[in-house]
Image (cartoon, rainbow, N blue to C red; front, side, top):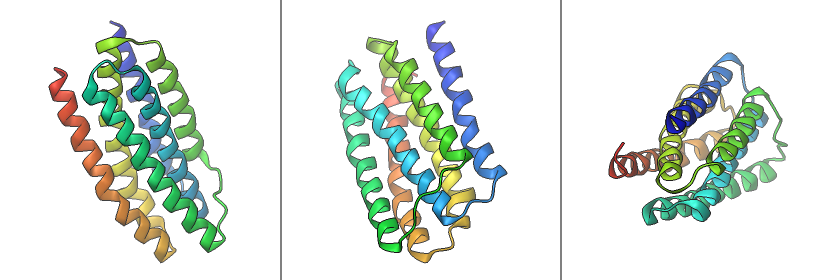
Length: 174
């Protein structure tokens, strides 16, 4: 029962990403805030997985999420600094931040295999939602060619993360 409640809670929080992203027109400064926030959400969850996962593959995946998403955030930060753009807070970034905090809180209450499954389930759903947001809102809305190029460049990494998480999900018995 605990696992079902956790998965439903995580899925409900993720639904806010495409709805919020689709319901608003976003400019480059808002896209920058969304990108940085989305990466930070996965960094925070990845750090928790590094510390709390019981399965070595899940622990390694968490570490990879921290490394890869920190790299994307560095690229995004370097780009907006070079362009003189200040990331602008917006409803999607706020929803991501809140959902990420709720996810970490929910995951923190779990141990062992339950933690591993909930973390991996979240990673599958989260990366799918981020890909949808990239494809439907962020890439089409980006007006700066360098920002658009960065979004297109990092998209395959998010897709690879999704596939890796799906493989982990299968290996954990989902």
